[in-house]
Length: 77
Image (cartoon, rainbow, N blue to C red; front, top):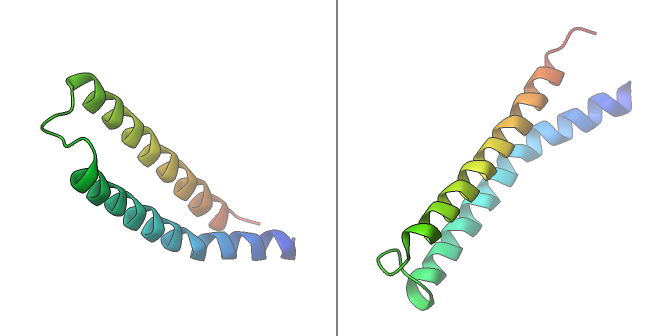
């Protein structure tokens, strides 16, 4: 039980770090695309819809992970 508790505590505190890294990498990627790749003005509607669906799925996955961590952290023993 102590190993599970320790694992949950580590995951709980690493989650904000993971969000920060995700945000920083997505902003860096967007900066790179703006400088060297396809800009939003030149992207087709299909590309924008695919990107929007991908990011929505990514956000939902992170929200699910956080919800599971919060529920498991506060569940009665």
